[in-house]
Image (cartoon, rainbow, N blue to C red; front, side):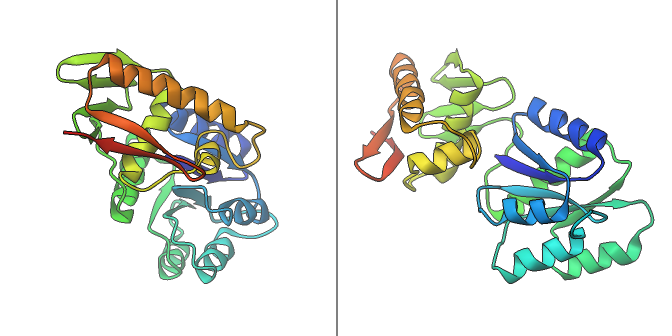
Length: 225
């Protein structure tokens, strides 16, 4: 899952970024509303954490423009305690939730999971399942029929993306944008390497799940009998 933080308080933004990364989210950070809008419109994010009081463009305006463009990305507004009118306005313009500063890490993570569930993504706390395999994104372990393997972070993120998309084909461009960011200089062969790693680990686990290549399109999971 990739999250965009739009927050002009640099220390808070950095702290949020570290918290989310420790919980295996991919994170990008910008510090003004215009940059937040530009990044959000690229469509690679699963959720936005959006402050209300921002330079260049306030958070309410960013949210309004996103919804006008048809962007359905879940948005959690970050508000100062007591800003009731801003909360109401944000919700009216299509915010999914709000968190008042200061907030606890547990509350923020719970609200993120809830927002993603409402969007229709599968975000269980314990693991993601496809066929006979289960991925635990907390400890990066892939298990099948009692056997388990430890994945590296990028392998886990890639497997998570493929499981969430289920039978939808995922292109190399989508994988690069989700795992490394839209402005990354990562090339297609990097994706091929991680796909190869995951295939070998699925074989080692004797799983019936395969990663199929759809030539010229991308990759998709298949659970064979």
